[in-house]
Image (cartoon, rainbow, N blue to C red; front, side, top):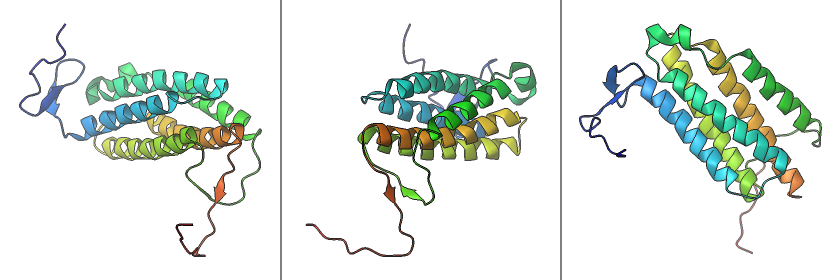
Length: 188
C-alpha cells in the first residue's frame, strides 16, 4: 500500500463515507487537532514514566482514535456512530480522583514545567484545550455529540493531574505562580 494517494493534492480530504471536504474545514481542524494531541501524548510516552501513567496514556491514545473517528464522520451520519460516551468520561473522572488523592493539596496556581515528561504533559493539556475549542466551534454548525466535548474537557483535567503526578513521582516540586509579583530575572 502506498503512503501517498495524491487525492489531497487539490486541498481536499475524504471523510468516512467518501464525502470530500476542504482540508481547512472546521471538521478537519477539529480531528486534526485531536490527532496533534495524540502525537503530543506519544512524545510524553517516549519518556520514562510511572507505570500507572504509561497505562493511562496508552488507553487515552486509543480513545483519541475513537474521538477522531467520530469527528471524521459527516454530520448526518454522526448519531449512529457515537463512539465516546459516559463510560469513557466516568473512567477519566475516576482516574483523576484516584491520582489527585495521592498528591499534595493544590491551593495556588502552578507554572507548567518540572520533569521533562511533566512539562510535555502540560503541553499536551494545552493542545487538548485547543482540540476542545475546535470541537465546540464545530458543534455550533454540525451535530457533534456532547460527550465528545465533555470527554476533551475531562481529558485536559486528567493531563494536568498526570503532570502533577509525574512531577511528584520524580520528586520535582511544582512551581507556584506568585501572582502579580515580579521576580528579577538573572543569569546566575
